[in-house]
Image 1: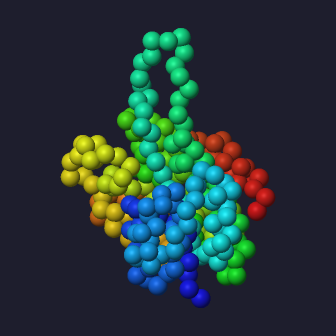
Image 2: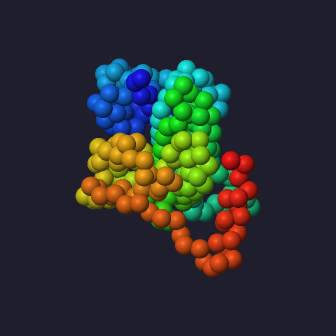
Length: 255
């Protein structure tokens, strides 16, 4: 049976590069993107294109219903905030802040993960993979983009928290944290600020491919920097009391 991968935000950048890699390995790829312009790119590489807004559960869930027998879900869609979090206002109260970056980078990833576990556990071939795109901003503080960093930290925490229960369903859950990858998220001038310290998008795709082929990846947060990648363990317990608390939360799982 042909393996099927569903990739959100797959019409460009990391998602598109990963789609090309998987297609070269014989996978069938379903790309989900809100940008209709990406349909042409999908046609060129022979991937299926589904226009959907990952921030709308009904839109996203319809795609999952159409791509039922997937073996891998790559929750990759993301944006960055386009505002100055530190802007000063000469008013009694600042205006309501635009938190769409949280909606897309975390809330939609939660929805994608929720749908992935449902469909991966119920398809004809049990099990599969869920890979979540976080960022180096999911490991380190990003002063320039604090809401982006907040969401990406949440993605890493989500992957680590889902990993053990999902494995009981035969599903591997992992998270990638690439360093600066020159995609459409930032302007050319912004990317130029990073100098030569860019991570090629193909290297990120290669790590995703490795995770899909390696059963030892479970609950891993994988930092990707240029041509290197590292498994980043969670923080050690502060003391034995905290270790007991965390173990109790694991015991409270219904799985």
